Image (cartoon, rainbow over all chains, first blue to last red; front, side):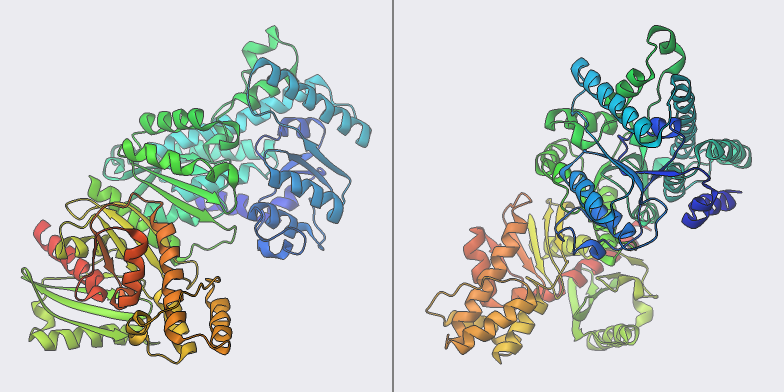
Length: 378
Length: 259
């Protein structure tokens, strides 16, 4: 059952075939996908498989490889998701993607959404206003009306997806089911591109199924013998890294990435808040600014406290920083954070991704050596 | 107890036989296309030298880039762990290992027991590695082994600005055309590599003693450039090339003890 489910949700072309609605692309997990759904579009996270260097004639080669890969994916090709795209200005590279996309790809609705960096009352108000502008823009461009009801409905659909993913993660982490980290991450990835309602149905069935199938496993967990790893960074382009970690005896207990826990960790408290606050945009603004944050949303002290909390809560033995090349936001504070981790006797490893699939020998050697360090540290 | 350590590197294969506290024999041969055969040949040669045979080996550990290509090894361990073990065995005061191999360079912080505390590795390109020096030696018409002594003759400072193997080669060629002395160019190259290694090393906490391993540590000019730049106590083993294989042998011994 697992194989079929993974096979079904992971084939990009098949996923695209199942989409009946017009596609609205997104590239950052601060994009309010609920609004896209409420507007009658299908939100599709662009996770490209194109060599970033294809876009080098348009964006310099010392530029975020994810951004270059996204651009390379649609340049000069018939693409299902080149026309409509919401970009959040979560970093400079994203803003340049917006510029380059408008200039070279053009498209119908290319929107830049401004995201504040903090979550004070003012920030929430500001983000709420920006969400209203996005709605106005969508309504005007596509001559549609986005109702409050449809927003509430979309919120509840997305909540369901996150809730199911969180439940499955819980089963994975406690080894109640036979699910590898790669498989789990594939399922998360799938939820970002598959039609939501159908996905929720499939995922619900899947979670229920594995629970029954793997009941025997619950007593047989090997988790105590494994080195518990926190992997933190931006986007996990190459899932085989997770496979290598597992192969060498590590257990990933928290994926602090936008294709991991950050995406599903929290939900929007719909039932309780609806009566008190009748504005769904308010709920969205509050949710997105207070969800498990991306390094971009934190200063050094806040990020340090955040990481330390994850480490303590999950008995993490080692931290792997996985960031894409040239990501200033992620790299800037790393030397200080690594130094502090060392003081806490937590070994850490920095890996650089380039958005090309296939884990090379050099990454494997680093991961294996790192797990040897953890093993000997006892 | 007799154990073997195999270090299958990118440019050379090293095998070593360890009996109790004594290195009985070792062999270093260049790698080639048929790695599997070469690994077996290399081990055979080493066994022959020490008068041992394969059956008497209590345990075998493989390390290096080709570590997974050794079907008869009991375990494969990364070169990082092995260099740490080897350097600790040769000099227990070692707290930092700088290994400059054929295709990569790495800096390893270790504790008093030879355990890795932290490490950093550069292997994105040939810049700052043994291969880089080989290419430059060829461009200058000097044998790789002679680079060290040649550079010690240098009287004039030359700065090599490019560290990319391809660009540095053309820089070297134009320096030769300008009539610069070979030894000055070589010293410039050593300085460029040591700058590169040191800027990487400084990302870790560098503690004395620093042990240099890998083939490049045989180059006296390179060692001198590094010493000058690091301003630290540097230890160079007699045979820096076999430290990885030695570490693998020590790891093999540990396997036997834990069984």
